[in-house]
Image (tube, rainbow over all chains, first blue to last red; front, side, top):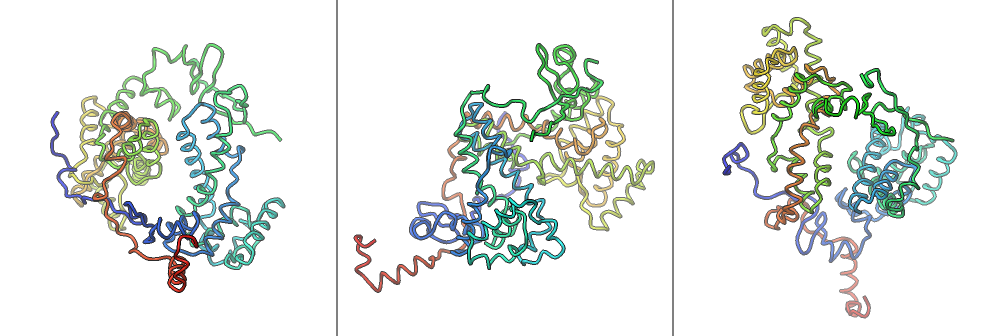
Length: 233
Length: 281
C-alpha cells in the first residue's frame, strides 16, 4: 500500500526536537558550560551529573553528592537488582542486557524507596521532621552506625544537612544528603540512587560465571506451587 | 536464617509435564487452549470459552495501531536501532506502566466504569440519568477517564471493536452499553468521544476481568505493535534514529557561560603569562 494521509500528516509539527540540558555538537555544553574546554577540565563526574540535574555548579554540594553516592553504592547480590543482573549474566546475556536488567531493577528499587519517603522529602529539606521522625528512625544499631559513618564522611558539610541531626534510617539519611545537594523531585532522587548503585551491581554480575547453572541455588528463595481446583479439570 | 518461601500459582516444572496456572500443559491445555484463552488464564486465572476468547482476539486485532511515530513505539524504534530486538521491545514496555497513554489509562477507564455502575445501579441504563451524571462530573471539573481522542474526531479502534462486538452479538454487555451511553453524553455535551481505553475497559469488564487486570491485558494486546517495530528496526538499524542530524535539534537551555574555576584560571593566567606555557600546565 502506498503512503496515504493520516492524522499525523494532517497536523503541523515542530521540525526539531528540543534540547534543554545538553547542547549537542562537536563542542557539547551542559547547562551552558563547555564540557571539553571547561566543565570536564575543572570538575569531576559527580559535579557534572549534579550540574545536569540542578542547573548549578556547586562544588561543596558536589562533594556531598559524591559522599552520598559512595555510601549508596554497595548493591549486593542479596538485593534483587544485582541478583537479577547476575542471573542475566548466568544465562549468557549480552553485556547490554545485563546492564539493562541491573538499571531497570535499580530504578524500580529506587522508585520503591522514594514512594516510602514521599511524605518526608520536603521535611528533609527543611530539617524538621515534625511528627515523622519515628517513622524514619534507624531500625538497627548497624544502620545507626552506618549513618554515623556517613556523618563522619561529610565532616563539617553535615551542617548543610540539618535532617542528619535526627536518628535516621540509612536510606532516609542518604536522601537527606541528596536533598541538601539540591535534588528535590522524585525523578532526581531516584536517578541519584540508581546512578550510585549501577556500577557495583554490574560489577558483581560481570564477576559471575556464564552458563554455570548448577552452581546457582535455583530454589532460593523456595517457591511452592499451589494448583487450584481447576488442575487437570 | 532461611529465606521465606513464596507460594506461586503460576507454574511448576514436573518430570514429563509442566503446570501452568492450575493446568497440566500437556494433558489439559495442549491442542485445546488458544492464545487468547491462555492470556486470560495468565492474567485473570481462568480459561475462556471459545466465544469469549474470540472477543479477546477481536480486541487484539482492533488495537493494531503500529505507526512507528506513535510515542511508545518510537521508543522501541530508537532503542532497537542498534540492532537489539528485545531491548527495544522492553524499552517500549517500560514506557507504559503508570503512563498517561498506552495501556495504563485503560485501568483508570475500567475503574471509572465500575464506579459509575456502582454509583448509579439500575439507573445506569437510563440515558437521562447518564446525561445528568456527566453534567455533574463536568461541573465538578472532573476529566473523565477514557475520553478524548488526540488529533482526530473519533478513535477508529473503538469503532472497529464496536463493529466486531455487534457482528458477534456481544455489544449488549453491561459495561459496553454503559460506555456507549457515556460516549453519547460526552459527545453531546463536549463534542468529545471515548477512546480505545474506554472501549477495552468495557470489553474486559464484560469478560469478567477486574480493573487492575485491564491494563496488563491491554499491554499484552499491544505487544504485536511493539514486536513488529522492534523486529523491523533491529534489521534496519536506522542511522537517522541512532543519531539525529544537528539541524534536527533545537537547544533551548541555558546560554553559554564560564565556570568559576575556568574564570579563576583565566585570571591567574592573565596575571602570570608564563603559566600559560604548556610546560606549566
